[in-house]
Image (cartoon, rainbow, N blue to C red; front, side, top):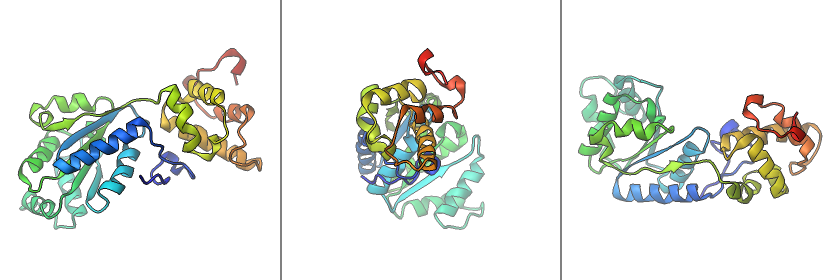
Length: 257
C-alpha cells in the first residue's frame, strides 16, 4: 500500500498512512467493490481518515480509473453533471449531456468517489443511481461522508438497497494508538506508551486529524529549538497543547497548562 504523505491533513511532512484494522478492512472492501462493480458507503465522524484512506487505497487498486468528486452542500444537479463532464473531458452543453456522460463512463470500468455525500440532494443521488443502473460496465460507486451519511442514504430505499457494504470509521482504540502512532510520524518514533496514551486522552481521542494538529505543532517547536524530530518531551507537548482550543482538552490538575 502506498503510504506517502500526500493528502494528509495540513500536508504534514513525513506523515504516513498506517495500516490500522480499519484501513486494511477498507482496502479489502474497495477491492471487492471494484471486482463486482458495486456501491459502498464509507461513513464516520470527522477527522478519522476516511478520505485519505480511500484516496490512498485507490491509488493502488484503480490508479487510472478513479474519478474523485467533492461537491459543496446542496450542489445543484446541473453543476454536478458539468463537473463530471469536465473530468471526463467531454462537451458539457446541456443538450444530450446525460447520454454523453453515460457513453464516456461505459468506455472503462471507472470508480466514482463522491466525498461529502451527506450534502448531496435527492436529485443528485437519484442521478448517480440511474447511472449505476444503466451504464455497462457499471461504475463502482464509493460514497464517503460524515456520521449522518448512512441515515441520509437510507432515506432513499431504492438507492440504499443497491449498496452492498456500509463500513464505518471509528476513533482509534488506545491499543491502536500505542501500536500505530510511532509509525505514523517520526515525532512519535521514540515516544513511550504512557505519553502516547496521555496525549490521546488529553487532546486527540483517537482522531487522526487531531493527532496531525498536535504532530505539526510539536514538529514546528522541535525545529525551532534545533531538536531532532524524535526529541519528544512532555514540556514540548504541553507547549504544543497550548495552541489547542482549551475546551477541546481534557487535562488533569497536574497537567493544566
